[in-house]
Amino acid sequence: MVRDQGALDSWAEGEGEPLLLIRTALSAQHLVPLAREPALAEHFRLLTYDRRGYGQSPPLQAPGSLEREAADAAAVLDDLEADSAHVLGDSYSVAIALELALTAPEGVRSLILIEPPPVLAPGADRFLAANRQLLDSVESDGVDAALEEFLGALSGPGWRSEYDGVVPGTSRRITQDAPAFFTADIPALLDWSLDAERATRLEQPMLHVAGTESGPLFATVHDWLHDLFPHVRTVSVPGAGHDVSFTHPAEVAAAVAEFLQQAGGTHDPGRRPGRS
Image 1 (cartoon, rainbow, N blue to C red):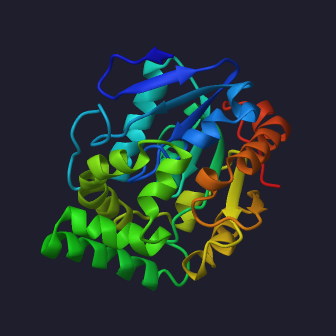
Image 2: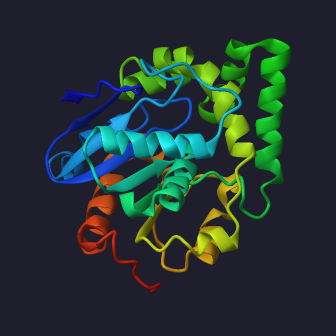
Image 3: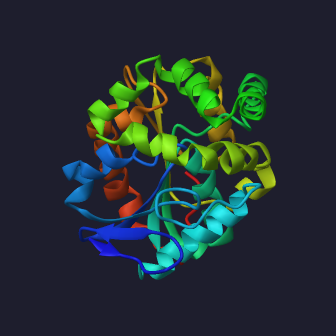
């Protein structure tokens, strides 16, 4: 493991084409099971980092900003001496991956979009209202109470033992990093925009990974993505929910590895492919 000595705590493991794993909001350990899968760990140079407000990286900057997040991701690629990389985003960090591809297209060989947030998809009103309710809960009851409300509803009252059973220490990290989620990440996502005009600038090969049991809030994400990016491929993981990369890492890793072999692995970032 090579530790970065710059502003953000970042590191690289393995050999092969670089694959940047951008950690999602709240759960910094969410992609750990995926990174351990041999289909990725044995064939790619995996790059990742703690975003601002998480782990040993600098304190958060509020309000949050997807543009600033993308600049941080570009800086990590530079610090880890990766001129370009395949880029994987999960839930919240899908927005970071897309912004990175928009602002630094030469640094993004391909995009893997796992369970994108439905903030911009048709019918997003319920998702937006739920996030605003969380911010209201933070203001009225505090971070700890809002955290229990959110994860209790998402994964049930036993979320701590459930998460720690997959990656020990996950619940402790979530509690530690929760202020960044509520103070910076949610406001940044609520302020994000990606219209059709901007979307036409993104022609890197794309893979969309979805769980079949993600629920009604995510029901329109597939069509929204394919309207914006007609060339995107979708792989659905049976029986998986929104946390598909955490609960079904082998299936996700296999889909990502196949995609990168067939499409992403041969992409030249200096040549913009046509839509297919």
